Amino acid sequence: MSYQESKSLTNIFSTIIITGIYALIVYRRYLNGTVDTTDVFKFWAITILIFIPVSIVVRIIIMIFFSIGTSVVQTVKGEEAGVMEIVDERDKLIELKATRISLITFSFGFIIALITQAANMNDHLFFITLIVFGVITEIVSELSTIIYYRKGV
Amino acid sequence: MKKLLINNNVRKLRFQNNEMTQKDLSVKVGVSRQTIVAIEKGQYSPTLELCFKLAIVFNKTIDEIFFIESNEKENDKITS
Image (cartoon, rainbow over all chains, first blue to last red; front, top):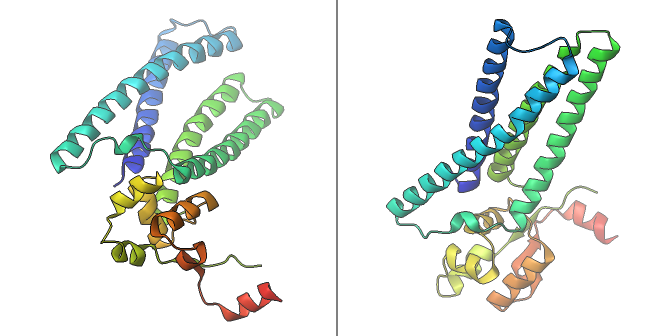
């Protein structure tokens, strides 16, 4: 498995783990009644605003460990270090294609979220749909990256 | 028009050039080794810039490195 494929897999797992744990924490607080849910928009604004920096910091930590792990494996195998730093035209093309796929996926999720509002469903469902499709978008994007690296562009 | 099947002689030319390794070639043209692997397998069609770089390294013209896989019917359509 190449460096890029391993990186994509790490991103998938980190997305699932970070979002899953955070969702569990928020849900427990919601069940305990420690959060004010009378104002739905305020509740979700606070939840998402906390999630963004937490997610970034945890991802950075995971990527640091991933880079250290990759370097150790390369050293053990006797490969030349610095392979991970090269981003060439093929990488950029694959990234572009994956970004296009992720945009389409998230747009689809946004439309579904709007439908929940048009159909007079619970306001919470709008934000939950957006977050779920955010995770799905990330997974689809990374999976498409792996497929492009394996099957070719 | 159908997608053209482009193949190449990169692997052959590497061996003709003092059995150059994929790593050596990737360093000379400034891409990753995985990209050279993908080009040799026909999984990636490089940009014109990279084609020229390969041509310079091998001291060949681009059409000596890259060629269209024989599909006579399709080629006739293109040329006509």
